[in-house]
Amino acid sequence: MPNENKSSIPVLPIKHWWLLRDQFRRSIPGTITTNYLSSVLGGTENSARTNIMPSLLMIGLIDQDGKVNQDHAKKFRDDDHYRQYCLDIKEAIYPQEVRDAFPDSDSDRARVVNWFQNYTGVGISGARRMAAFYLLLCEANPEKKKEIKETPVKVARTKKATKKGPKEDSSQKDEIDKSSKQKKQTQDQQKLPGLNINIQVHISSDATPDQIDQIFASMAKHLYNREP
Image (tube, rainbow, N blue to C red; front, top):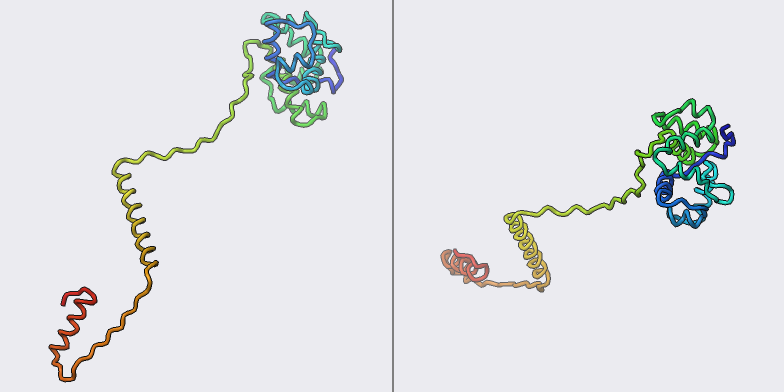
């Protein structure tokens, strides 16, 4: 008979399921402790005690003392018995209702999540973990091992400046040099002290127009550097 206790639905992470199976293929332990799980799966003992041990107990892989059910462990790690082992867990734990509504791994995941959320009363995050493990058991295929590596963190890369051609670099450099030179000249001019020159020209009253023109032409030449 399936377990009708709503609080006894496994939430074993898929990653840990495959890691544990790989470990069992190497060696089946006699007893599973929180220290064993934290060493094999990573994480802390407290996390193993809270998130993993209860699920292993629910599926019958260990008893209350952490002793491993050797018969289950052998089926768990063996490819030839893996499918039947998953089906046995599904029939032993999950209500007939969910098994009838969602009999295989092709079932709509969102609807499976919704069913677990309504049945257990847990939040969306917990329902998703329950649904993921349930669909894993439905799939029951050791050849479809899920990716257990962490997704690499994407590091934002600064876009490198496009290399300019020789002509463009030279032109850009000339513009920068010209701008810097003009800026320096402006700064130098601002530093110079102001100079005011008052020139008084006394022209004789009997000077002729030609003489007056010559006087101003001479002033333009020597004071403003202008040719007549």
